[in-house]
Amino acid sequence: MTSTVQEPQADGIDLTGRRVVIPGGTGAVGEGIVRAWLRAGAEVIVPSRTAERVAEFTDVLGDEANLGGLHFVVGDYTTFDGAETLAEQITHEFGAITDVIASIGGWWQGKPLWDVSEAEWDRYFVGLTTAHVAQVRAWIPRLPQDGSYQLILGGSATTPVPGSSIINMEQAALLMMRQVLAAEVGEQRRVTSLVLGPVATRLRHRVDPTWVSSEEVGLATAAVAAQPAVSAVDLELRSKADLRELLQRLTGSSDSGEAGEPAGRPGDSTEREARA
Image (cartoon, rainbow, N blue to C red; front, top):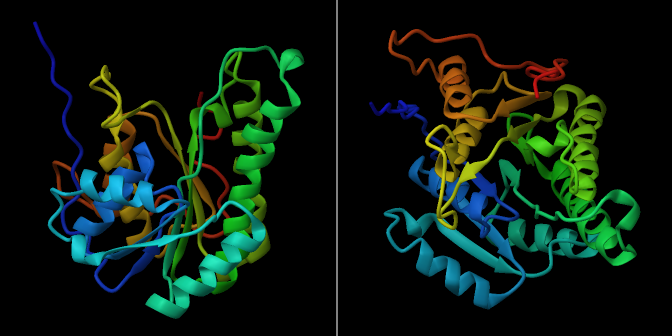
């Protein structure tokens, strides 16, 4: 006997008129976020460090219908100065940005914490956290009150993974960054995160049918952006069941067609904080 997993859906998310910057958009998860926002009618801007990567990514997206709404800028967005320079360039060239989705990350595994080298620490902790803080410095002051700043995090932010201590610590630091950032901006900005489990991407050869796809991660970010009441919250997205629940609450997409309560409002902290 075989079982099927119901694919989550959300009809009617319209982001026409919104302009989003997606640092890390050329990555495996970022690709799905880019696709989802293009399909929702948004103008999408993806920074990349090399023109070669832009060319490769453009080929990957060749089947998308709304590529006229996709733009690239080339430059190093992972440093404070680089992120600020690109933010100035982007706003000058394309206009005001309404949303930012930081999908910057990487994976490292293989050693206990006491065997970690300084080079590994600098690359996977200092480098990645610095890249995220650089985006915050560059974009938070430029976003409108009804825009959104969203972080894409992994389950390692809350669940220890032996042999991946650097990533655990980096992701946990970013989760706290989201929370303190929301406390500092109050109701003047919307700041959220999605805490993901394993994601089915184009690059994975074997996936579990319960995993969300990169496009479904993008769908969740679009739903968050479209719901002005959602802010100051960390949303768990470890499975398709989580996604169905989230979309039902944000958009009313369910078998019954009834809309749920928004998943978070200013002052909230986490969604299922203790869940592993």
